[in-house]
Image (cartoon, rainbow, N blue to C red; front, side, top):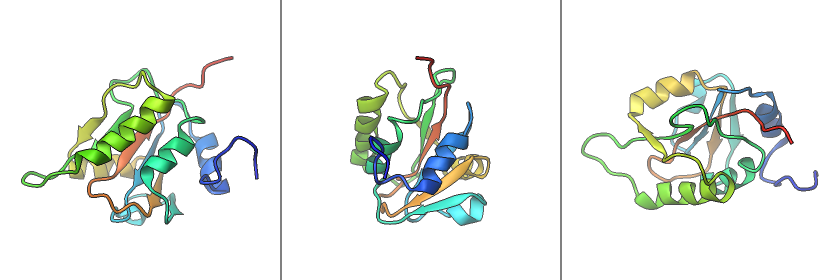
Length: 144
């Protein structure tokens, strides 16, 4: 156990976060996402909800401030809708740790899958929120 690091972060996930570089992306996926089909580096975080994982990751993870949208979610398909409480929960976690982050971008479903293919890793959670997938782009850790 490490002091000051959330017990929600597995050793494998901590290693992934450490190995990621500036501009690399991480997908936190809901339980329905085809993570293993789209990305060879897929970790399991069954039982965890994405807002809780965001609260664990964001104190350790600098979001990219050189791009327009360092955080993006999968947009609902035409004719469907997402629960606005999902985005609000994500935004609340982001605001606690990186309040200057621009609004969360919305990415069309198949474009999101393509981005997930190129992501550094996908983390499959137990979250069953519809359209709960979120993509984080890592930035440069500021010097102290």
